Image 1 (cartoon, rainbow, N blue to C red):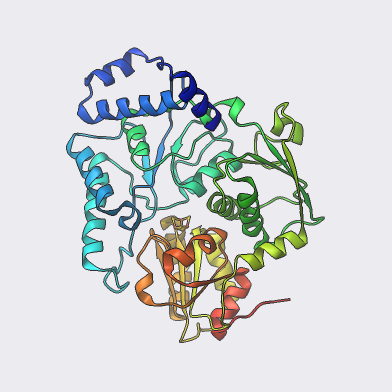
Image 2: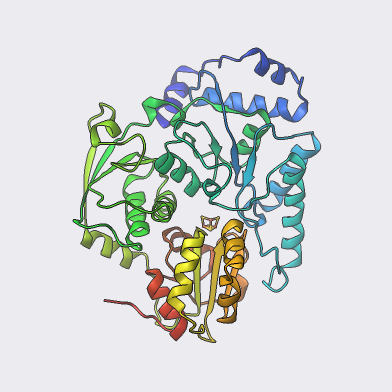
Length: 428
Ligand code: F3S
């Protein structure tokens, strides 16, 4: 994408081919909002060297939380809705910007709550499906190999491309809304075969399946090393769970700008190393050892105290499997009275946890479990937590700035033990 961008700046961008239907939309036949969407997407497409549009199956929005949308985002969404902007493909959305079940109890400022609700009204008017999760791939829009999508949530983009072989660029807020209104995206970047070839070889020298905590640590390490380049991970042993890939992709997309990584034997387009490179020679080779992952884990921590006052899990949103694991690890033990223990999940997982009686059990043990929001995109700073502990690579990247805490990245087992004792419990 960047190569095309530079090429087109230098030569002057060329006009995109438009179908008759697209010309009609551009002329205003489907209303002012669709016209504006088409005009904007054509500009973006031409700058990025797109020759045409590609029809998309669905869209996932990131204009979802007042914390990141600010007043300008709220007003823009309202404006597009007032202009008649309506989605023509299924459009889902990232987590809600506050605890919808109990926003007052979650110390949400009144102004913040009002703006969050205005944003919600605007996207609902456009026809969003309010799933409020960063893991849309576990729902009715689960991506399939080769499908074209327009998703914006970085962890979900990386998952859709890497784990499912679907095709989406990292869209931005507003552009994703426009794609949903016209049902198309510029045919550029990761929609094209030639831009999906591996660029960097990553040789993993670990002769055993990775442990659960090592996936986000590896993702974090590779995100930092790759930036926006496409890595090919060779040598991963065993068969990672879907949750492992979720946590790996979330960390890689946060610590770098990773939108696609080929994991040989896992990514559908990468049955073996050669297929992942598609005839390219690797421009760089990176060797990763067990020690590199341990060092990354240390670098992900910034704590200056052993006291743990906040444990936050579920970034990206926890699945039912992950909730069940925490339930088993706690084994009826109560969380320390000076420690907050919060779990964020998607609503399917929470519903299942309720049906299984697990949510009720966990809440008796002082675990707060919420769907449809998260620690990073809701206003957590006012709680005044000093040290946050998490099993998430993405949360450990954003937590210090967004939650105003020192950070400890650890395994879920260590997070649970620390929440029970109230101080850092690290297993050797
Ligand atoms: Fe999801 Fe919030 Fe993390 S949106 S990926 S839980 S920052």
